[in-house]
Image 1 (cartoon, rainbow, N blue to C red):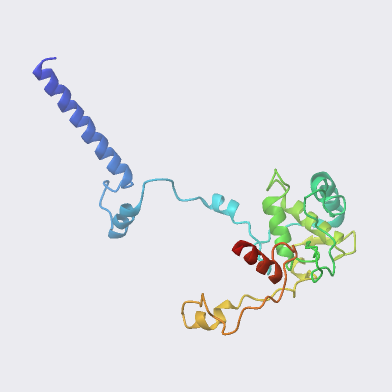
Image 2: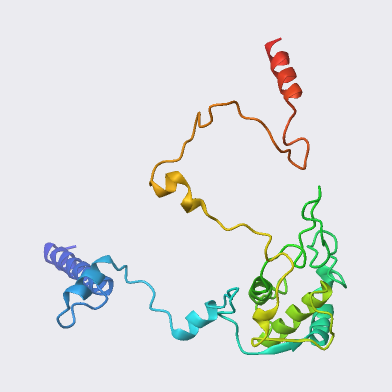
Length: 247
């Protein structure tokens, strides 16, 4: 290859590299080179990676499906116990049982009344969940398993009504649940939870670091045992393990 051809090739490569770098910088800056950018736009372009785009209102609405205990987020719609039973038998009973009793290792949705203080509490929607909004939110967001968010708003209302019926919270098969009467339903364990008041503790109010060692002047005493006995060993077994290790 002649020297002139080598120079031409080198020059072309440099021009291409410069053009690529200019195009990359323009894309990175989000087109800030076109026209004059305001200081705010200039600052935004400096921290932008030039990826993605703002979400549309429709896309945000598709994710904004949470429901609060006070009813915020509930859509318009309604469904009856009878309608919910039909949907439940077709799409839910295979995992949760015909009456919400649960099958195999799938969770039970009904039963468990007065068992929360027992050695083996049965935590179901009827015995444990404090808010009906959690039922609607979870069914709407995650059920049926493997086909989440395939149910219409009316179908979710109907399923929620049927789950209430399975737990004897409503007893009329003609009961219709809707946005209008949703917050009138009180779950049996609504008062069974304590508010999180950790921010009222001394070290939080003083914005101090919590104590992590030697916090109690007296020796620590075990006051409760885990349900699985092997989790919390007895003091005698601890001593025997120490003795055996010494030997």
